[in-house]
Figure 1: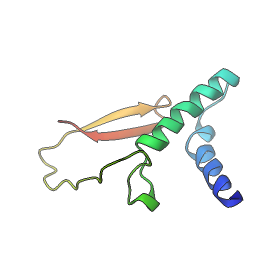
Figure 2: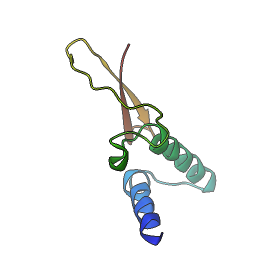
Figure 3: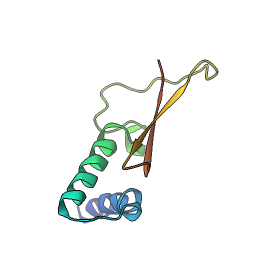
Length: 87
């Protein structure tokens, strides 16, 4: 179990905390809550075939990329970007 915890803590540190200056406990709570939301609802996971943990259906591949627009959502002030297809 220790190896799993170290892996998660390392991911949190590398992807969020190394890029944000934490001001106080309330700020740390908000940053970690936003990262947890991103981690569980959007971030792809290799062990789950590039699906987030809370995904219930498999992702469908996109074949015609010329007709699709990407929308970007900035997370943690732009530290992390989420991309989705529009429409």
